Image 1: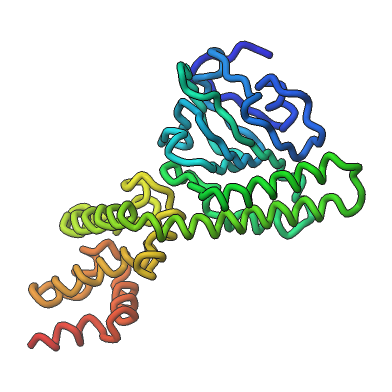
Image 2 (image 1 turned 120 degrees about the vertical axis):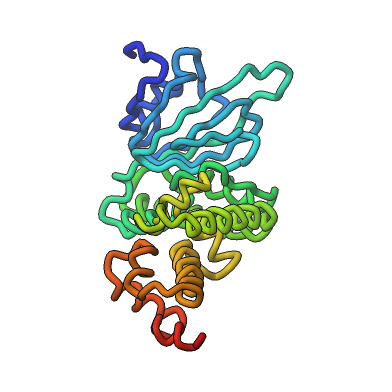
Length: 310
């Protein structure tokens, strides 16, 4: 293996290559592997390297003393049990000295996208938002939930260890779909049970949008995008929208639009600016677009709303 310097981006193209880099036996199947995490070797040479891998990894880990950087954010391993990494996304594992702590344990399910070739999961896997850069929201599991996940892991491993036949791919993929659907269910449960944290995020969203709308110069350059709002809150756009839907029934885009309409009502009722001037001041390129959104949200045109105050 060539020497890799700190801060260099290391590409891992295959599951076989990952096994070799981490001191693991060669995988039994080139496109899918269940790895015993206690066997993964972390060395000083690879402990500060950022990695990009070309396969999915679903991790279920315990007692890992270290940090995991995914995208631009990092979190402690003990802040969650399950993690999800998609192909082409940057991450870094930094493991610390264990001291008196128990050794790490758990499993890594690695799946190369080629396994999904010519199956519906090749496209549908993209709908699972937890594969995004949702770095502060790894998945906590109850004992019952963890046993469900471990059972599916074992089913998958048992299938690819057997003699491969024409049924193997479909059976493995059906197990992966079941795993992803359970993870989706458990994430939704987590959103509900962590309302305090999520309400805090909602408060931060409201504060950010209020400050943005009160900055006339900034607003005139364009109202905030969903991505820019999510970046400001250090979460992924998909996670932010999922959380808002759970708490309010609205998407991030709808929250932004509602704030725009509030600001528009304020200007229509308290200034003599024309509708066009208000539209441009709210970041709309075309006044017609503003009028269309205003009517969709209020069932009134901007002029009708203004006249109701006279």
